[in-house]
Each structure stands twice: as C-alpha cells, then as structure tokens.
Image (cartoon, rainbow, N blue to C red):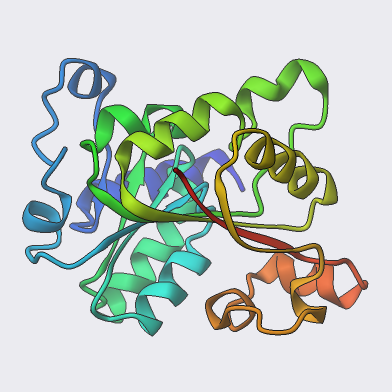
Amino acid sequence: MGSKNKLRRFKENETFKNVVQPSREEVFNNALELKGNWSKKFFNNDKPLVLELGCGKGEYTLSLAQNNPNVNFLGIDIKGARFWRGAKIALEENLTNVGFLRTQIELVDHLFAENEVDEIWITFPDPQIKYKRTKHRLTNESFLRKYKTILKPNGVVHLKTDSEFMHGYTLGLLHGKEEIIEYAHHDVYGSQGAPEAVTNIQTFYEKQYLEIGKKITYIRFKFR
C-alpha cells in the first residue's frame, strides 16, 4: 500500500465514529473516559464486550459482530490503515455492535478496567518464533497476566492460528500454570465438535492456508 493511500485511510479513520485512537498521554495518564465504560459510553448499551487482538483488516471482528448482534465487538490493532476497511464496512452496513481501537496490544490493561471484558479472540498472530522476540508473543506470560486482569471471572480466551509452534507453546504454558483448557485441537477443521464461531468464519489468508492443506489450530481456555 502506497504512503498516499495510508495517509488517506488515517484521515478517514479520524472521521469514523466507530474508531477510537487514544494518545499515549490519555492511556498512561488514565484519562481515557472509555476505560471501564466501553459498552456504556462507546456502544451505548450494557451488552457483553468481546475483543479481537491483532484484528488486521477486521474480517473476524466483523463476522463475529454480524453473527452475534447482542454482543459488542472491538477489534484492536496498531495498524489503522489495515482495519480502515473493516471500520468502513461496519459503517456502511450500519453495524452498531462493532468498533475498532488503534493501539498497541501490550497496553490493554491500561485501556480496559479489571473484569470489564467477557471474551478475547487472538486470531492468526505472528508466532514470533525467534527466541529473542518472545516478549512480543501474544500468549506469553506477561500478556496472559494482562488478559486475566481485564477479563471477567470465567472470561474466555480463544486462540486460532495456523502455527503449530504457537499452538504448542501456548498449550505448554497453560498446562504449566494449570489453567482451564476447555478445547484444544491441532486441526480444528478435522476435529469433532469444533465450535461454529471457529469453523464458520474464515479470513482471506485462512482460506489460502486451507487451500494448500495447512492445518488450523484452536484453543479455548479460562484462567483459574
């Protein structure tokens, strides 16, 4: 994507009522009024709140919102030029239960209050296979602590990925911490009883993975 296109999308995002782009000052000075009030002040209701971390173009966030009108969905990504498309489609389709937040995922515990979030989806994250980059891996111990803080008791985390490495790494961590693994399979399309939200929604890249025979893995877990 050219720099002119990116700039145009950034400017459009500023006009979209379903996009929030807080400054670092707002985040770190605890000045974001939406913190603790996302459903009430952003979605104007009291419905459950679900996050998609690293939402990319927003395909999964949009599909979840379309399939679950009584739930609020918020896609989070630092790359606003990517989720511009999802935000635009949501406005065109008048989807009032979907929004997008431009921020770094490591700041989630500054952007949401304790026990504010009902579920978290992590879809096709960068597995960060190189050892020195584990601090950016979205299911490392640091991130898991943040998720536990913002999730409600019994809140659920979903991890869907094409990376066997990421799947195994996360399962190992969860077993070591004795967390509650409700479902795990290294080939979700080849398994029995896979959740519909996992198999009924496919992103553009996921379809490409499936066409070349790549397995899609999935874990659903809770914290003790």
